[in-house]
Every structure is written in structure tokens, then in C-alpha cells.
Amino acid sequence: MSLADRKWWQRVFHKPAERRVDALNDIAAMKECLSELHMDVKVILKELTELEELEKERMVAKSGIVHVNLETQARVFDRLLERYEFFENDVDINGLRLKRIAGEYLKQAQRAGLTDLVAEKKENAKWHFLW
Image (cartoon, helix red, strand yellow):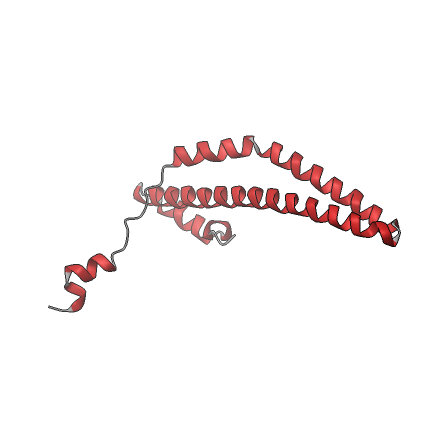
């Protein structure tokens, strides 16, 4: 009996079952995230406006005040980077959800016999999910 056939070896190196795509649940999560997106954008825009004002002040400030301005900018950057990271993560997660839903759609279309449609979509660069 070879090593690959032994049960303990298969338990160590087994492939986990592929997670089933729940399109309705993913779509609902995407809709919820997108409906709350405007709140995140408002906060980010507010922070960017504050940063812009501080940068304008720094450009005309005297040498003694520049340190205070830069420290204030650092605090704004901390808040801005944190919010933008959350924003970017939410968008990335929704992008992954959309890719999974579209991939499942192609599988369902193939099973339904829509081979021409599936072939057409697979030729389209957007459907390669390289974005």
C-alpha cells in the first residue's frame, strides 16, 4: 500500500469541500454594504477636506508652527488610513462575492445547456475575473 493510499496521509492532506455559493445571501450582503457606502464616503471626504486644509496651512506656516501642523496631519492620516482600509476591504469582499456568484452562474448555465452563452462569456475578458 503506497503512502498516498493510507488514511492518515489522506486526513493530513485532504482538500476541504468547496464552499457552496449562496447567491441570494451574497446579493443581500452586497446590497446592504452598498446602501451604507455613502456614510463611509462622507467620513472619508470630511477627513480629506481637513487634510487638504492642513496642507494648505503648512505651506504658508512659519517654521515654529509647522511641527504642530504636521502632528495634526499625522492624526488625520491615522483616521483616514483606517477608514479607507475598512472601505477598501468592504469593496474587495463584495468583489469576491460577485465573482463567486458569476462563476456559479456560468456553472448553472452550462448545466442548463447554454453552452454558446457560456463560451461567449468565457471569451469576454471581464468574465475571466482578473480584476
